[in-house]
Length: 463
Ligand SMILES: *Cc1c(COP(=O)(O)O)cnc(C)c1O
Image (cartoon, rainbow, N blue to C red; front, side):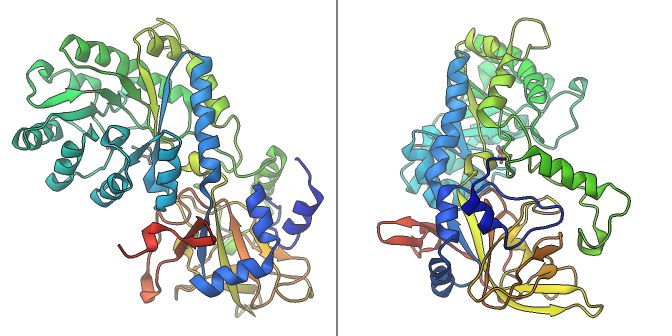
């Protein structure tokens, strides 16, 4: 790992066992090295507060565009907004020339109101009421259509709006690819049944697929199914310009492969106990918090993979047809763009003596579909160092298993009420995707850089 003494000192205040030290961007290091600035944010906005710094989003997107260029493929990046609701991120993506992937009417309306042209928006909502379809059609937003029945609804909405809908049929990979079944899209064989030359008020501008997981080979398998569909759609007169392979572009939260493998060696060692996780939880479903390659390197590998029909590589299949490759990364575009601050409310012991550290936040404010966020927090100490302490971070919901993190945390120089815990790199999903306001506790506020320091994001300002 790239050791930096000041960062190591900052990270020494708290760690799991074995430790999983976070990668820290410079802005995170600067903020977390300033306890008064952290305390001022909590005093003004309450705890927890989501701190969002969009500065790294253009860098992350450029890695994908540059990788495409190396293979002669034009890449269009569409920020998957469901990964974080802050409007500053939409602006950062748009200002850098990228598009946005939206999943609801509010998301679409806000993006259009922010000045993003409909041509740079794709609607991939799982459920699309007529009002949403109408807004999409009128604004020129591309609609990812989930099947022939939805295509008919889009055509009807467009006809009555006297508009032409821009659509991208969503493809589900066939069982022959060996990929798991999916609720999204339909097989290319089902799309082939549509009489594309006769669908009224609809223009097919692309073909869409989004797969679970992060495997480049899976995406090339579905690309191999999309290309013949593109050829058939063009033969029916449609101006198909892109294949959209969705999200799932990988990222890494940890700098070091060795700590990740060390952690799993301990988890599977056979003498695992509550020294590692709450009630010895096995952490069955977790994001690969360390992985390689990521973003640009990953796309390089993907584009060089051969297509199953032997006609060439993913890159040549796209380039020979003059197709752009669209991607809809959420999490990996937000790498380095956010952290969560929470105040320590108390330390106490569970009835059997196990240490507890109460935080002014609830577990939905740092949760994704993963069983745990496997990244060590950072302690921002407000008082003097004390005796070593260890225990579990518990939150505000009145539930026994209300854990902010399931790993036991070790504080070599103690922790006390009034200290601050920072959860680094929470920008992608961890802040909002499962957040709830149970017990009538308000949702966390979101701050972004402004001309006079951190200010509320537009999503939290009344219109
Ligand atoms: C969730 C989602 C994404 C973003 O996925 P990431 O893993 O965050 O990159 C992109 N497209 C669609 C259709 C999605 O549902």
